[in-house]
Image (cartoon, rainbow, N blue to C red):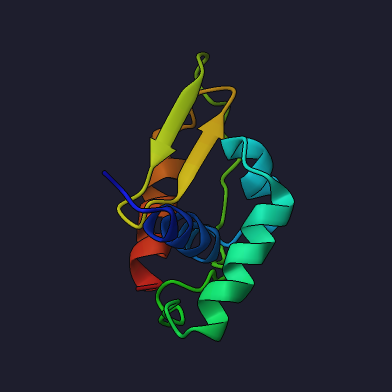
Length: 107
């Protein structure tokens, strides 16, 4: 069984890796915002929280999107980095190719 420290360590690390706000992460996972902030501070103070590597820190990547009508249907795309894109419609193949090419260049 996972210890309390390991439970919160995983969530605090996930906030850093996902590059979203602590508030958004807590809301998504049904966690107490105050507890998440408390554990983030506690883990930082005890040096149990590893600093994110440059690859873990979010970066903006330029993406060129061609004027193409996407096919109908919802789509969720999960990239190898763990980035999850939820779209209301299936994008055009050219857009997906451009995304993959630009994402590969950011590594």
